[in-house]
Length: 174
Image (cartoon, rainbow, N blue to C red):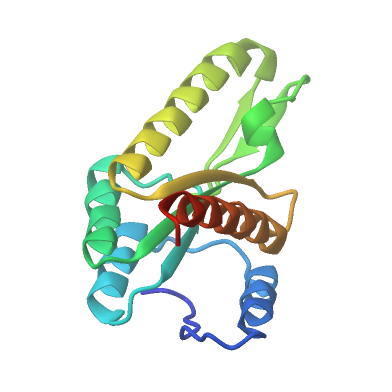
């Protein structure tokens, strides 16, 4: 089950409420995203925009069907793939201890230089596979850096989406 739920609203200040909740939320917990998405698809009656902020580290064999379930219920879906800059760039240079955030208590001491190329190759393949699975479900995929608050990232997406829709309406003549 999700840790929190904000009911949908069309009030002008609702975006601020969502942004504040995002800013105040701390990552953590081991809640399977697919279960949350299936529950949401079953509960949400009115069509809307569902925004998922996730590292995507759930198996695609369970995440793909959950995303398709949300889309089947005719919701629009945005998957914001949240990544820390160090995950994307792997800038570590000196030997370091890495702590597994998904399984607390597991620590590995490694030489980052020896792992960098293999890590980046696997990481990029993972991001590509996740983006393909999200798009195959009929959803939008965007990367979102943890170095930037989620609100501006979401606002940028909505602005691009709005401009795109305006252009397509203009081409259709309406």
